[in-house]
Length: 212
Image 1 (cartoon, one colour):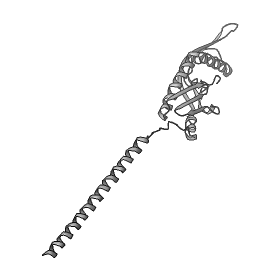
Image 2 (spheres, one colour):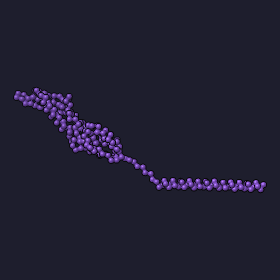
Image 3 (cartoon, one colour):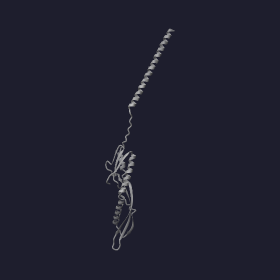
Image 4 (cartoon, helix red, strand yellow):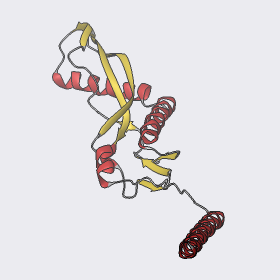
């Protein structure tokens, strides 16, 4: 019986020892976890995350060529009608010719005439220098609609050519006015600005050459 009691005592001591070891292991694990959490929070407090956005918009050669490929870009059309008459004095009677001419003048820019460095970008800003507003087609008189309003006597092709040139000059005076040119410039500015905004630019400067 005494031997059994001694054995039971040894078993209890071993169990107690094992329990103490478990407690120590748990305590060490808790301490280690606490240290790890503390380090994580310390690093988080010391580290700041910065998000930067790149607002740079590249003007690629493809974009430049696509704009230049537009070629002649019409921003205003002006229709006009002119009556031209001429009289040739004769001894017994006068010859008289009256003709009516119709024409439509197209005002705009020719993108093939842009100069080197005509478009420059920096970040979300862009500057564009366009060719001067000009007449896109010099043959604006519709000869198919030209008709004689009154004709007496005999007239040559040279006479009719002279009247055509007179009508041409008068239409230019009516069409290429400062007011019409400014209207075309304003239309060009608005359309180019909308196009550049659609690409992503925020600050846009558009200028025109002084001379066509």
